[in-house]
Image (cartoon, rainbow, N blue to C red; front, side):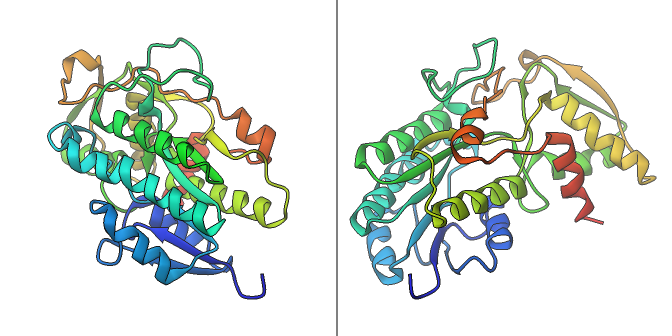
Length: 293
């Protein structure tokens, strides 16, 4: 390409979008479209926006991620998570360019004992997971060159997420009860963005792996209780107050949407086919927290 790479990023203020805007700096021209320019809640806004930008690559970092709220607003969740990704894929296919899209561990029901692989049959437990699965299917149906990257337990130093909520509550309260029977990999948005850059670089070098669905989470595993413990340990090291933590089962903390008990994703295919691997979840958390100081 004679001109710089033009990358359209949908979503402006979300955790992954914010991280992408940092990690992809210098890779090309980033055109970040928020709701005011391209509202995935209104899929009809997509085609004119893409037409105007004429990108070389589309990254869909926008999503309806309020898991419990999705149960009461399924139409909006499906518009953002299913219909719009399909339209973005149609546009990518029309322009002959790739699409990178982020999906979720919530496409699975959590019933498997081992790691979930890309060939396992999805069976989402709620509207959020169902809408994200429908988005995957809509993208695949277009035949576009697409990377669908399933991740899990995303956190960062911006927005609303478990890390920031725990930092606040652990310092405000004397005791906290945290669910201990849901297992997965907390994944820093920075890790997702760094891996996305590596994937783009592989594509630019002309050596891409297969297009399709891949798992992209931090390596290792823990529970929400273990994640909270790790956050608390860092507060204590910094000389800050920290509540006492008590583990509880999911049954003791009912929510509108059911969560999968096993969210562990096997990410070996991404390493094997694209040469991209992820750091240990605890090391990535420390790297994230280092930016907060």
